Every structure is written in structure tokens, then in C-alpha cells.
Image 1 (cartoon, rainbow, N blue to C red):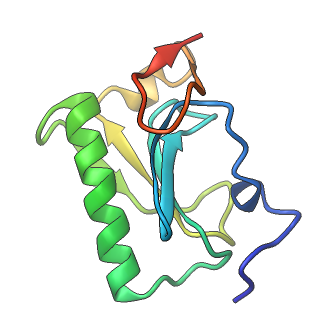
Image 2 (image 1 turned 120 degrees about the vertical axis):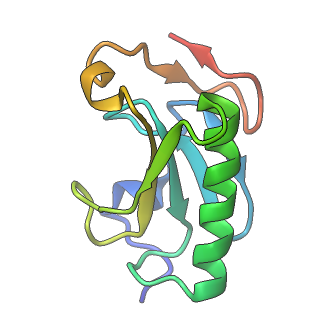
Length: 117
């Protein structure tokens, strides 16, 4: 496992959309494709330790509860578009239907109020 891959979009961690959380293990921001919260493991790789995985999923669950309400979402760990870097999405029941019409958020700082474009 490399800590960083310069060709990986998730390693780049560009701040275009709203960022909910960041710490030494992960960051959580709105996915540029589907506009739902996505947790990304900071090191480049696909197999975080059990402790890192538990931490990331707990953080993503907290963000999901804030954004969608308790039990109004599921955690999707399928890494479709970037299979070489661990990430997971927090999807509400309407995500697929609304993925192309939801307004994209914009970056205003980590942990600030979510603002749409």
C-alpha cells in the first residue's frame, strides 16, 4: 500500500464540494458524482485496518444522520468508479432518482454549514 498515488482522484482530495469531516484517518465530503456524503480513507489502498474501518463508518453514519435523519440512509461500500482507493457512500432512499438533479454543494470549509451552488 502506498500512502499517496498522484494519479488517484481520491488521493488528490480536491475541495470542490462540501466537506463534513476530516481527521488523521479519513475525510468526508459530498461525492461529485451523486451528491451524497462519501468517506475516503486517507492512505491510498483498499484494505483499511479494522480500527480504521470502524472509525470511518462511525463518522459516515454520524454525517448521514445529520444530513438525512436517523435510519434514513444506507452505507454503500461498493467502490465502483475508483476501485483502487477505499471509500464508501452514505445513500438516502432517493439518491439514484435524484443523483442528476440534486444541486451540487460547494466547499466552504471543513465542518461548516452545507451550501449548494
